[in-house]
Amino acid sequence: MGELKKRYAHKLLTNFTETLEAFLIGVSYKFFCWLQEHQEVFIEHKTTLRFLWG
Image 1 (cartoon, rainbow, N blue to C red):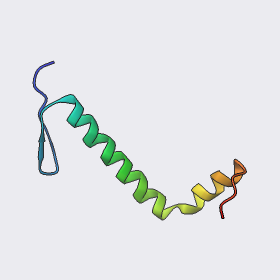
Image 2: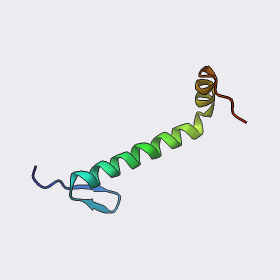
Image 3: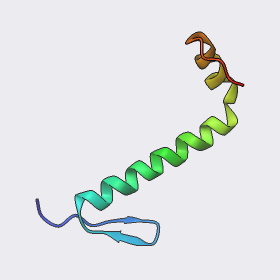
Image 4: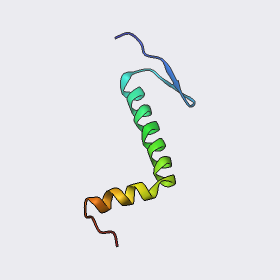
């Protein structure tokens, strides 16, 4: 596969596992930020699935 070198923040990523982990953390963070701004979309989705929140 060769040597994979990418920069993510301040850490040098040298293998696929580290790169995948960094990618997933980034996607999770972006989704969390989006969800904070669009909570009504999440609530409406859960309502259509008939989940009740206390």
